[in-house]
Length: 379
Image 1 (cartoon, rainbow, N blue to C red):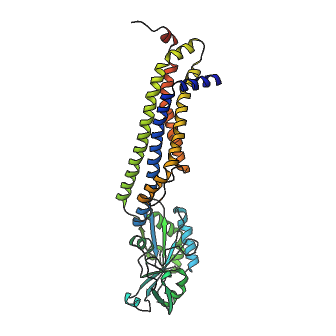
Image 2: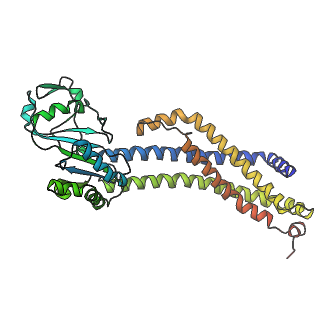
Image 3: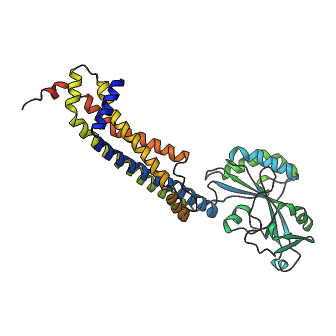
């Protein structure tokens, strides 16, 4: 076996010009494949994040309640989480809203009365909203005589307002106790559930009825009466479909280039097998098994692919600064060409090239009758 591999390496060295050209072909295909798939990945990620920011996370729902069914906040939050955690793929943040509040210091009293909301994580800790962003530093809101600085105020975009609810103000949870002094109206609750599905409205309602039905009856109400709505938060299905189409196009380009490289290597190997058929026939006539012939062909292909991948990795390392610059200017992030995911795709692509470029040449070389080579039939 070792002697067969050594012979294969000697044959490869004898045809080193062809080997070098084949390595360059594979390296080019691998490099383009690596760059295209990586830029596709970060581009798709950035596009998906932008769509989620503008249209909502896919399969997300808002559950808004006008009453706590006589439960305190901790009991209500626990009950809703017990009901909806099994159907939610992510932790369920919630919003506490105090209606009929009017800020007291000018010019904010001109806003009139409205809901002031406070956003919490599922575990009750303050949700990390960008408080103070896009708010003038001298902004000040007065609640029950206490000034709330600009760093405690959140101004949502339309998509964020859709997620967290319409509100006069979003204020940091540290000031909730002040807002509680300014209204006698029942507190409203809003839970954001992410199931990842587009048909979960009835599932959410059924889970709430099962968990809170008896509590609601004792309170003299029902879950449906107290639940303002179970509403889809995500949209932009057409944009999401276009995003998927772009990812598919990038994938076709990447794998297409890799396929062309594999096809070029396959043609090269078929020519080599044809030229060396006399050697394979002679070896078989002298007692070599088909396994030895297969090794002679496969080692040449493996050597070409391994050297091509190594060259592609070297090119990726050298091209990393330029690729990062392109990615930052286009997608606002770096393109790590040799991250674990990219390397996994590279290994998968190399395996695909290896299979495509070696299978038929090996079958052709091992299926040849040595007599047909040593004594060609004369027609």
